[in-house]
Length: 174
Image (cartoon, rainbow, N blue to C red):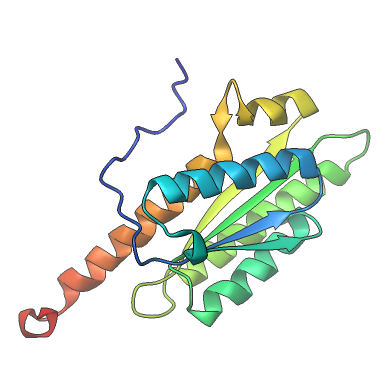
């Protein structure tokens, strides 16, 4: 039993929502599995295949600026960022993890206020010590964190749409 996995949300209905996936090409074997998990989760929640748009970037460092541009455009209900940073023999791992985390946190906070509903930004970046740990979280025995991030983004986007609807005057809800 994995205590870190969220309860499934069978009530998520992503029909009519467009979701962007921003996927790092670095550690491609892992990020491809994260991408597949995200697409599968979104399709299972009713997001139509043409409404799942995938954008590839070179590495984890490029996730935040790309997510920011996509969120600012206002086209997507959610932007899911997927990457894998695996520790090596230098401090580079630490700096990339820190930059990706801080960058995506900033984008998520900013994007929550953009447009009528905000744009949900999800963090699906694995930061692991080994390739085996990353593989376990990208469809292995630890599940697929790409799918988890996609469902978290979708759930948040739906919540924010409901909050915006609740904030409207009754006459405007029609």
